[in-house]
Image 1 (cartoon, rainbow, N blue to C red):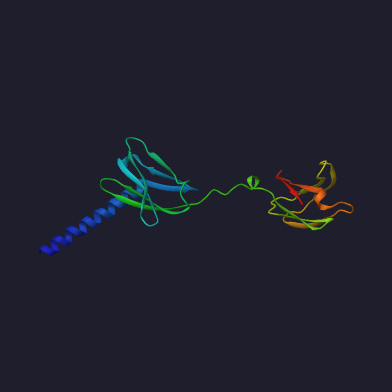
Image 2 (tube, rainbow, N blue to C red; image 1 turned 30 degrees about the horizontal axis):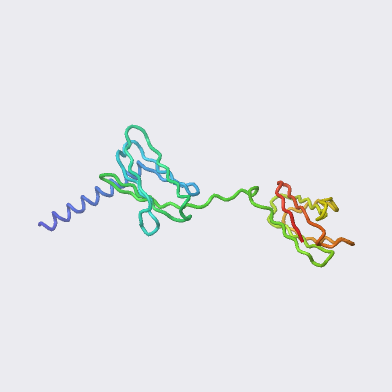
Length: 193
């Protein structure tokens, strides 16, 4: 008889824990954007402790919040941590809930990336130019004198993606010239040989 009563009490406690967990899940929300996590708690939550855990469950940081009459958004910046999977644990006096989240680095806009242009002397009068990573067509190539900076040759290449081209100069040594390569976004690269 005692066993049946103990089993009934354990079941009731388990059911209450499940119901409480669902209540806290309804009163909270976790979102991530790049390496930032926002935890939104509704006013009914009251006092809570929010912890950020690594994928092994190790506590990385935590905050205690006291919510009175309005919903609260608690931000966490994980910019100093590697991108990856984390857990957000929210604990109140009666309930606990864990949300998995994933962070990732913000992609660098193309215009902030350097122009990828490479040149090498094929022989003493010829230079091979390779340009990769273009997102828009149009590259201006200016060949200038190494000593005076005077423009020797200019060409506009209307190529939408990567290209490779040889430039030959009769009577000029590759050591006497340099190239200024500018794409349609204004990114520039200067190449010496």
